[in-house]
Length: 185
Image 1 (cartoon, rainbow, N blue to C red):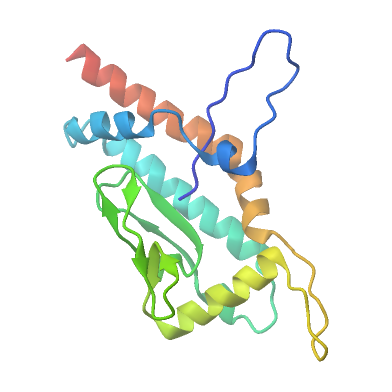
Image 2 (image 1 turned 120 degrees about the vertical axis):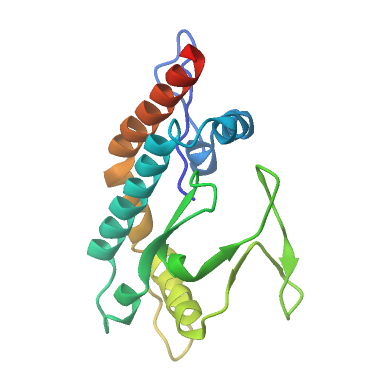
């Protein structure tokens, strides 16, 4: 899921230096998810709509930036909204992803055939192959004797960076309105 970092500036500091993983994490997301789940369906409908629109926009951005070798990878770009409508996954293979969750924030960690840990399962063989190719394009490869190295294109990250401000504005606005309605009774 693409998440947005809600950071604070300290006095005297020009900017907050945060790692990439911190930029995508929420502070207090578990508590917010619990609160939003308790709201009436009509109250949180705008939040669910904003989350789905975010997935559509991210999928569109990834599709526009996807390398066009054969076009097979472009066909696998999509988005998937969780059952509670509070999370969206967007990118190559997202429509075929199955994410197992425990409670609100934890993810089930399973082991695959080789014994490695995994959090996401993609059963469709073609979607899994396109995801591997997307990872090679996203992060690059070292190359071998017979295959030259491939530089990283970061097309998923560029799509998120292009949509980040609109995502923040849309989702934060919808959450604020839902919490205001819930607080007013």
